[in-house]
Length: 185
Image 1 (cartoon, one colour):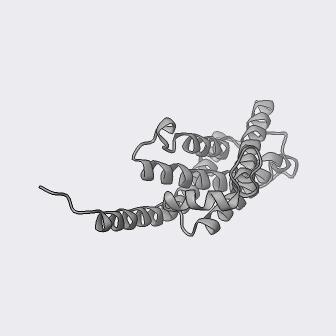
Image 2 (cartoon, rainbow, N blue to C red):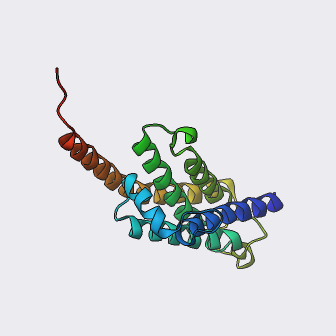
């Protein structure tokens, strides 16, 4: 089980490290900051440059914490909240959850994996375990409490950001409707 948790943490951390550097630096076939900012704005994440940097900072911080297994519930909550915003914003802007149509299916799956790490804990091969951190679950009841806390923190953070996203997308739709040429009956 511990080997599986280590591999899960490392894979999730690597994926989100790559996401962050795609957005900001253009690594791993990414677009970089200046080309990502308009995409963020198109899905209601404004101002684009600021939101790209914020998303990347969250992905990098959460990835580091998850990779080394330090403050794992915090890392899991950061990643789950960030990916929930990415998935929610994509889904709202495209009107579908499915990735093939531009929806947020993939980031929502990454958010779910991060939440699951909140419930399981980092495993023995982690700094949290080596430091005997209080948040390393020692029973199913403790795992449930810690996991629910991770889920609630991520949901509250993402919920606030997604309400802002919804307002931005609604404003965009009103502006587009107002500038559209009148239709003839």
